[in-house]
Amino acid sequence: MSEPSASGAPRVTPVDDGIARIAWVPGENVDVVRREVAAALVDHARVEALVDADDTDAQRTATWSGMRREGVMRGVDGDRVVYARLATDTPVHEPGGFRALLNSFLPRKRGIGQMLLRDTTAAEAGGPRVLLCQLTYKTDWDLPGGVVEVGESPRDAVVREVEEELGLVVPAGPLLLTDWLPPWGGWDDALCLVFDGGVHDPSVTDRVVMQAREIKDVAFCTLDEVDERAADFTARRVRAAVAALGSGAAYTESGRA
Image (tube, rainbow, N blue to C red; front, side, top):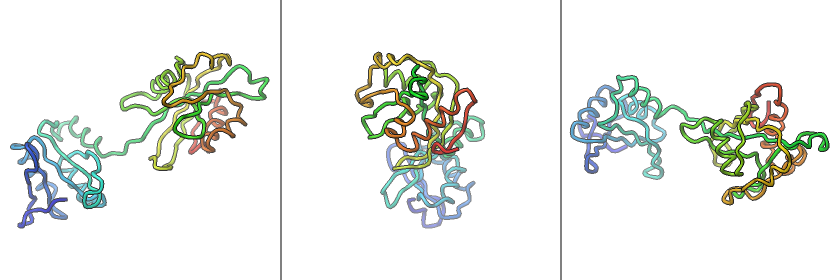
């Protein structure tokens, strides 16, 4: 973070029109920083602090002085965590203001909604066939679905994604599986929720309108074909979701019980 004043007191420096930046010495009393932030907001619309990403004490001071975590500024003398408070922010002593402060730094988990659609040829296939999508942005196949948007329910998300990707309007049935996905290949961890999409005539694929940006092909696949076409963790998730049909929702981690 920028340097405090020569006296060691927190230093407030204007950096742009209506914006000030505050810095303080390690171990500074939170109440002192809080007062300086409040005083700076009398003349500025925004007060911010840039805190070293590995300085947990300074991050704690920034938070409890009322500044919300906004993100990470990468590659500026190392990575810096950006904290800020606006003159228009709800006071922290009010419930809404305190919740907003907590919400700015508490962990957030990515959610993914997927749908398990089967066709009516289970008897001839020797087991269920499930609908898989061949994706444009990776080589393996996957269940239809996608990332849950901010403020969107996973059930609404999977219905939206199936309609966007395949042009099919399919109500989401009961939750079959919650699968935790560990960090992998540059992705943070996530929760994948698989909903029952019901049983359909195989001809439903004739009505599919593929979203060209994401979907190259769709097909009903036996579980053995799922093993061949999908990534190993996806194949495990599909098998776990199929096993949960009629028995209540299950929980797995990377498809493993």
